[in-house]
Length: 230
Ligand SMILES: Nc1ncnc2c1ncn2[C@@H]1O[C@H](COP(=O)(O)OP(=O)(O)OP(=O)(O)O)[C@@H](O)[C@H]1O
Ligand SMILES: [Mg+2]
Image 1 (cartoon, rainbow, N blue to C red):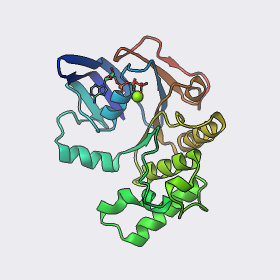
Image 2: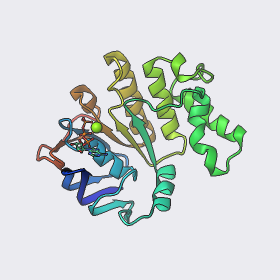
Image 3: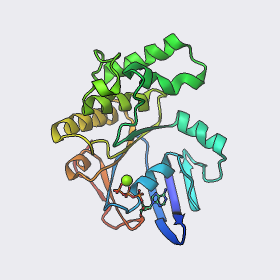
C-alpha cells in the first residue's frame, strides 16, 4: 500500500546541506505492522513525514495504493492527509483549550458532518481507547498515557488506512508505554490497521511484524522479519 522508490530529501540551512534521506526504498503492505529504528538524525521522522504526505521528496517516487503522490500539489496532499493517514506524535500535540471529545472531533470539522455526528464518532473512539469517562477533561487534566490515548483516538477519527506513530511512548513511563503499545498492537491485530512505528525502544519494536533499521538516511541491511508478531 506504501511504496517508496529511491526517495531522497535534503534540508538546506544557510550554507549547510543535510541529506536526511539518501535514496531509500521501502514497501509496506496492507495490514502490516512495521517498526522503524535507528540512531537520532538517521531520517526516521523525515521518512514518516513523507509517507504521511506532510512533506514531499526531492527525488524518487512515493506510491500510495499505486498512485504516485510525489507530483501532488498542496491541495491534493492535504486531502490525502485528511483521509488516508493518522498521525501520533511523541508530544501528543493536543489542543490545550479543548476537551478530549473536542480534540478527537476536531479533524472532522471540515468534512460536512454535523456536530452531533462528530461528537458521536469522537465518543465512540474515546470509548475504544478506554477513556469513556474522560470525555470532558482537558489535556492538562489527563495523565501522559491518557493524553496519548486521546491523540490515538484523534488519529483514527477519519478512519485512516494507515497509522503513523513517531515515538508514541517516548514521553511515557515504561508501564504506560506498554499500555499504549498494546493498544496499537490491538488496532493492527483486531482491525487490520496498517501501522508504521518509529521507536528507540527495542521492547516496543518487538510488537511489530518487521523491523527496519535506518542509518544515515538509508535502510541498512539489517532489515529483518521479526519472527513473533502476528
Ligand atoms: N526541517 C528541517 N530543517 C533542517 N534540517 C532538518 C529538518 N528536519 C530534519 N532535519 C535534519 O535531517 C536529519 C534527519 O532528521 P530526522 O528528524 O528525520 O531524524 P530522526 O531519525 O527522526 O531523529 P530522532 O531519532 O532524533 O527523532 C537530521 O540531521 C536533522 O537535523
Ligand atoms: Mg525523529
